[in-house]
Amino acid sequence: MVSDPSNPSRRSPDHPSFLASGLAIIWLIALVKLLFHIYFNNRYGYFRDEFDYMSCGDHLAWGYVDQPPLIPFLIHISRAVLGDSLRAIRFIPALASSLLVVQTAALAREFGGRRFALLLSAVTVVIAPQYLSNGSLLGTNCLEPNLWMGCAYFALLAIKRANPRYWLWFGVVAGLGMQEKYSIAVFGFAIVVGLLLTPQRRVFLNPWIWLGGLAAFLIFLPNLLWNIHYHWPFVELMHNIRAEGRDVVLPFPQYFLQQTLLVGPITAPIWLTGLLALLFSARLKPYRFLGWSYLVCFMTFFVLHGKNYYLAPVYPMLLAAGAVVIESAIEGRKEGIPEDPHPSWAWLKPVSIILVLAAGAYFVPITVPVLSPNGFLAYTKHLPFKLPVMEHAHARAALPQWYADQFGWEEIVAETAQAWNRIPAADRADCAIFAQDYGQAGAIDFLGRRSGLPPSLSGHQTWWLWGPHGYSGNCMIVLDDRREKLEDLWNHVEYVGTSADNPYALEKQIDVFLCRGAKFGTLDQLWPQIKHWR
Picture 1 (tube, rainbow, N blue to C red):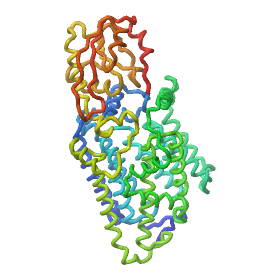
Picture 2 (cartoon, one colour; picture 1 turned 30 degrees about the horizontal axis):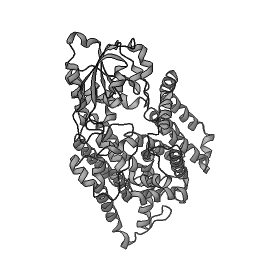
Picture 3 (cartoon, rainbow, N blue to C red; picture 1 turned 90 degrees about the vertical axis):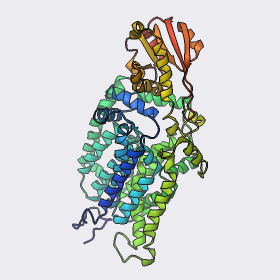
Picture 4 (cartoon, one colour; picture 1 turned 180 degrees about the vertical axis):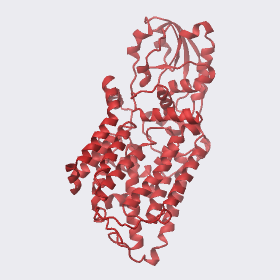
């Protein structure tokens, strides 16, 4: 008996076995991807944002200026269990990126796909540059696709199986997503719009979808209260970034083109096929709300000048749908009814897999440090396009920002330690280290422990909320500031030195000063003036 995918209330009682369905090979692919990331995840150095997450994890709270609390909480647990090595810090993203392979294949299966559709959708996720990058660095991006696709999966099941209880699980995942990165709210909004634009709007007559919304709200509530208590820090941060014009704003054609680069140019025909199928195919008509959700997300992020990768978490569901349509075309199936495969088309299955893997392998060095820095620079000379730049300040680096921000931190900390060693032991209890941004501050907090450096101070992001730690301000090591400005604040300003030049770093040759004799009174009095949220 074959189920009719156009009728979501009917399900086939004949479920293929774990091996026959192809899920065994999918799990094997996911395991290989995990081992791949674990092997290469210690090639360069700690990434700027990773210092931020680790420092926030040392100050557990229900929120932070630039992020919700889930990633800092998870890295706090991970460090306690696995330690502080690069591979340990990046185990969570490696695992999440690998599980995304299984999630995408599961979506393809629910769309009606068989073994080839599962395999094709899984392979497209394996080689997608954005998901490779997610598996290589700790960040809020690393769990985002898993949570978005968790929402998509439970929404799909609620419709396909005519079981509204799945909307409760949709809400649970959405609530966790809000504790990981706020942008999932756009996807949730897009799902609602998609449902309202299709016959599936009837789900709003059922209490379970409202209970799902309540679950999402209750899970998100602690962070919401935190934001209210601190007068909406994240909103203020986003406003400041917009006012400063820090991000690169792309015109529509370039924004769309860069979407094709996120998951690889070779896979663009697959996800575009999936999008068109979700919007127009009779076979996938029950899930048309997912196609609308993509369009709503795309236009929302484009209008709000969101970075190109903000839309990246949505593509696995389009890749899954596209793989199912391509499988049906190769096998000569219509509306989910299998026919005899066209013998002359069977060769397309292995060829398409090989082409996707070959194209993916060509682009792997862009997002995974399989090459040395010099090797990477030589490799980029042969790329058919320029790598995208998300912020204007990133254009000055030799390497792309996601690599450049893994260099230079050791040199900054070493120069700071030189200044620290000039301070008599008796004076160190009241001598603070002030950094200009969370990268510098986090590097001192994490790497500086080897040299006996105390935790840093900064006016940047959540460091400002953590305050001056009781320091008076009469003795302070200050990084990366103008001497003239410092002399307005202290009686004695001594230039200690400049961090050694690292040719690959984004932050190069940071000046370090030793300042004594505060003119501003106490550091508590000065603190409101050094707030720096952007």
